[in-house]
Length: 216
Image (cartoon, rainbow, N blue to C red; front, side):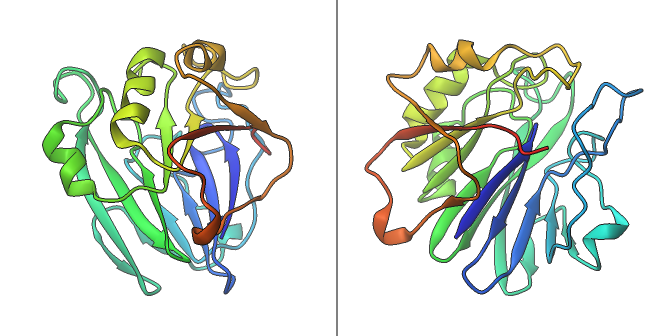
């Protein structure tokens, strides 16, 4: 499987057979231009969105005719398991709810929690099952902050954790810098080349934090 960090909370996963799953694509230049990442304009087979906010849901005509997943179900032979999660630390009282999605490509289990506002409960963690790749929001304000994100990584114990949804020069949203999260984890490694090549047989022991720069 190949994994590419497009930017913000958007990732592209591609299976060994060429099936392409795009997670939480943003609307380019949304929020009066504050979402300043370049448009992603490639064909994909599935678009997965954790919630309908403009920085997490956009289906561009250049994507082709993808299946759009916004709730648990099947698409293109993939089972997308969903968990209802709060968009804030007050159990959805301030910003409502998102759907965190877990699915597998080439035997690798990916979990995208969207704008999760707190670490998982014990029950949510148990329902989630095995997680090989955790995409972890860490910028605060709209999600949990650096300290809680690091606690979630320790809680889930994935093979690989990849931070997302943090401050970036072209994204003018009130988010904390990536450095805050990295200061809370025991170790991390920057990965220069994308896509990231992943194999079920070659996953590291829990947990390696990998930092990918946005491609857009």
